[in-house]
Image (cartoon, rainbow, N blue to C red; front, side, top):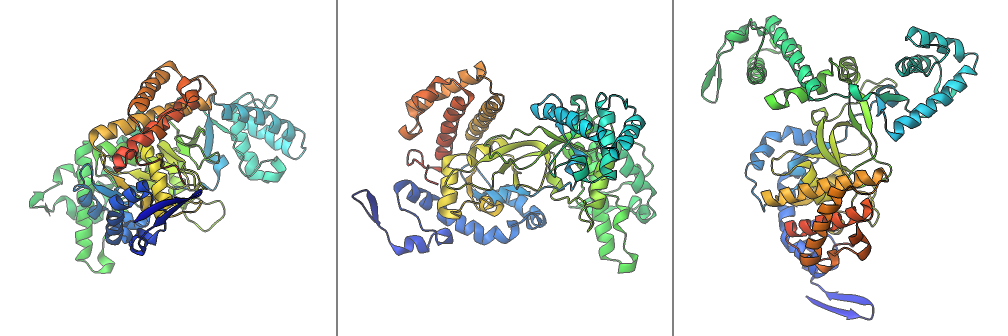
Length: 531
């Protein structure tokens, strides 16, 4: 291979086989950094795609092949090359079909204050409408509010709005398609204690259900053989309480017993799904995860009523969005969502990938036209269908470390050069990306940098100066970059001042790209800033 400069052009004499052998027969300029990525990852990506792609190309295939994937995960060691789609589960989330009914902004936030101002505007409009006013007054009074001051009692006012939205069209009420009106009180945001309560309630409910099902009578007296062990469950037939560990084991054993029984019975004699009592995809196999699963599928029945909800970010932010949205997830809401999911009627919800709700993950902006990917960390939340999301499911890669890798220059560079070069980054583009399993030290470093970037982004959203601890840590990282990083990753003079959160973030993003170059084995071969 030969390289030369001709006036302002770079000229390369490269063999045709280089491109014919490339994954997807990608055509690229054979510069040193690009060739290093090609040599390190091309064969691995092709082999992994050939072996696994049909088993991971969508969320259903991934779920169906999860046992094989978990076996594969146990073979991975630091330094191994794998695909994002092999170690991260994902897809789209839910469509509520009625955002205004269920979504709310957290009280005290700028968005909530804007809703309070909007409530005054709506109140004035409705009181000026002869058709709306009497129904509005009655609804306020029935909800415990004062018709003379409709907006004074927030809960009563929101209840009245629900009534008005059932009686009048959105146009009549001056409601826009995307308008929200609810505010989530801070003391009604669910905590771990609320999730725990949901699990305790569900355990009692399911244990009683299993005990009362005649179709399961034989289960309590049978001995179940599993991996050479003989398991009996008679001691739980009349139990009123059960430990988390025993409950999860009992849940698994009942499902195994029913599957074996049904395999040996005629269709008309098979045990019904209702006898097990679980919703579709609801399962309890990990005591530590029980509170989350119970909350997803059965909602909240204690003090907490709202959980975080995340949509796609129209602003295209990196690291974090600025939407303090929450969704009411009480027991009746969860029940209504699951019971009506996918019904062919107006304003019906669609539940997708529920098993990933209330976990942390990574999402990204669809459009990235000649710019790096804009990936965002999502805290544990219910997420909607407006953008795709991936959740790492191996112990050696947290969502925070993954968002650092995905926001590095080298990650976007590889994606644009070898996976797909257009403005849209779709979920299968992300699934096909190679990722190197980090060592424990690398993971700690990537996760820590992501946390600092997220902190800087939060400070940027508030238009406040960066906090002193963030500046102090970033100043240390600045010195590391200047002393040891490639010159193209050195901060500018303005950035070194660390005057604003954006200055801090710019320095931290350079550190992220440096760490990713080391992870991908191409340190100093950039810059990888051509997208």
